[in-house]
Length: 491
Image (cartoon, rainbow, N blue to C red; front, side, top):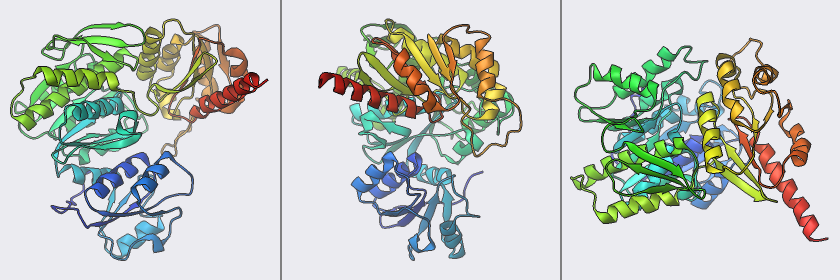
């Protein structure tokens, strides 16, 4: 599962080639190597991504096609995205033929983590936001860390990385295909564990076993920071406790014991206010949702653990507490996590990556509490046939929170082979059995645009939800409504 490759003590001067460099994680890792002094080259497809701008700004050269000629003759290491295979990609084949070390992204991330006091953030839900919040807090406290999130973060300047120093490393670590087992954590944040990725983990017990295995990678003296409100996370902790008396368990959440118990929460003027047991202050968030408060509590716990390691003591003075408060309130979320796309004519347009029933339910409940006066209009596109089939009833139930709901076809995955009969129309029928009114179906995402232009009214919140490509609908809607408003103003 784990690569035996180790990076040299210093990577300054190394020549590293990235195959699939435009991917979010790949671009982020390329930037970290680049800022450590490595010479970076890369290749990818010609389609434009937001990462093109980052690579151009850094001055990292890359080709928009795959060719053996792209591979530097003196390359020391090749790192590749999971979207490509050494069996089929011409550059990877050439690297292997030349005996150049070749690492997939997750193994390269693991090798990079060995160089630091590293913390891995894991869980079925909340990884990206917790990582982004932690980076924001570490920056606020001036701690020497590097952070890698799974999405672009507003507080990171629209990037997935934040470089504040070279002592600590915090990274989002993924459970799919046990990818996180390549990582070398001294601390793990465990946000949630439940059935997901059914194409790889057919049962809850199988995905739970992967998280147990990851937790057991902690060294003696390591820390497992976990959500006391999540049954799966607590389940993992109980199993790990049976054999690991040499690590520390730190809980957070409404049912936690100790300093990170959430003792109060309320919404006020599009802010979420909350309190933690150990701190005589009120924290504020500008991002909606009870789930975001849980992620913030996890981020505070991890940040203060890193601060304690850095300073050698755990006392929190007034200045540090003030920096925590200010940093949390400054947090603006990450790409595709309750991301505000724009507002026009009183209609607020948002996009969110929530694609599991639990995430859908908590996201919609959080939006309703945060925006109590807005009608909630949702476009949802389910991701993967296997997940939809396995959790069909849970999806139908979770989507009831929308005032108006628009469903679409399933957004399939190249990694799954599904021969069952569940389709987007199946999900629509199951949802319709519960929701009798204000439910609509448009197989193709963009076919819903005329309906939405007619349906939406001032004061509405329109959310594109899911891991598919229905985010295009929100973007197109904003552009068309802005264009129409401009035309009206110019009359």
